[in-house]
Image 1: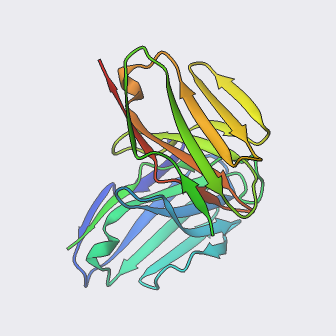
Image 2: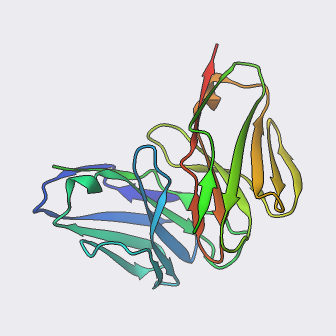
Length: 115
Length: 108
């Protein structure tokens, strides 16, 4: 596999469920990101990890809990979500987050629907 | 605060040229990026500008004026497959700020 992969691609869950989104990058990058993309709104940065350490939490509600066990894997644990959390969740990676010229490579996203 | 503005939607004809504008106000500037995103797919990197001027990559060119906080993406010889959303993003100190995207409709 190459690039950035995400599973599942689609997820429907109830407000009381607990689920996890998984992201894996095969690019040897050291920075990974979670974004939320809602219809007609800008991509919203949620979390940034550099060398497995969280360096950015963009005031994300605690019902979203990230985990980065190593530089290649990133998880987003979900619990007691709200219907307004329905969106496309994109994972991205870059060589490093602190270098200006490093671009981000995105995964295909997980389309989440909260009922 | 951070602000990235770009038009919501544009329509152009196959074979024509279209210019998508982006204006920005951000704290810190480490470059401006353009991404293409087809419906239901991941954004893919198109271009990067950090110095003023025009960067050309085949049918796509991107321009930057840092003093004006302005960039544009120029698409030439439009093809139907260019129908997509185009995202303008500015890299601040260590994170990206994205615009809402411009949906480009290419018609025959």
